[in-house]
View 1 (cartoon, rainbow, N blue to C red):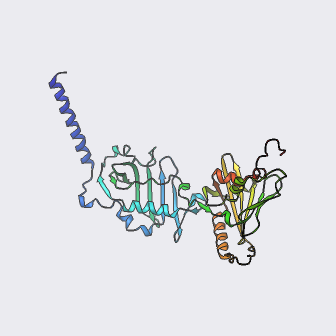
View 2: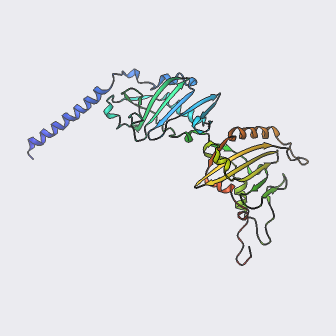
View 3: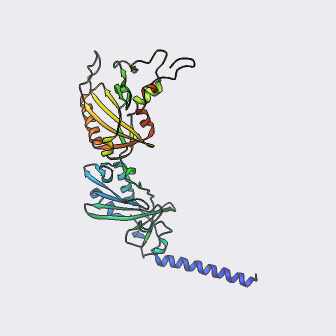
Length: 352
């Protein structure tokens, strides 16, 4: 290739780069440096007024989260179950305090590259968030891809794009926003666990008193068999720090289903019945809580905290009434362990 031809190609490449840069600059709105502060000052000044948030991730259904009272938000599409308020507040606060790093293009031809297409047209990770004060939309924004220490964003209905100094990736489904902490019934507080299996006789694990942490199996193990301590503890701890995966309204299928039941009783009179069944790879759970008479205290022992038991029973009923929960396989299998699993395998040569 002749030198002058190569030189001309270099000059042409530089010229085209310059034109592209000029076009990109021309596509930007005219924003002075002092204006590049908060991206959404209107949200920052009205955070306390927000009562509803709509979220729509590309490829997923849109859904809403709604305020129902002081410090209480629910997911209407999930049996109006409580939302993780900390997660919601963090998301809104991050968006409200995000600062503009740079004004980017206003050319809609670049929206797809920045993952800022209208969410109904996008097929990637684009997210649209709309925050309302009552019925008034305070902010409607599209969240795009990350880059250069932040994230690209665009207000719905505007072509102008921005780079902010924060990065958000909100949950794409209502289940992602639920308050996952379901119930916490600790093994150390239990008096007994009574099991009513789908088939076969009922059986139980019972603690003999406050002064022991061990449980006895009733009926007692057959001669030559020992209790399986690990499985005993797995059942007794199944409601300890139990977290849900999903929730739905209880339906006709639940009413017609056959449930395995485990009733956990505490010394303070609280009783929590867990009804569990397996459907394919999923474990479904229903909970009921009641308050009976506490077990009498022994001499020298502190009084039972019956007020705490009352409050916990009411909280479980509020969360669980009319709802069916999906839980992970570990507590699901633990709750469904049968009597045989409470025993160690017979030693070689022993008769089971």
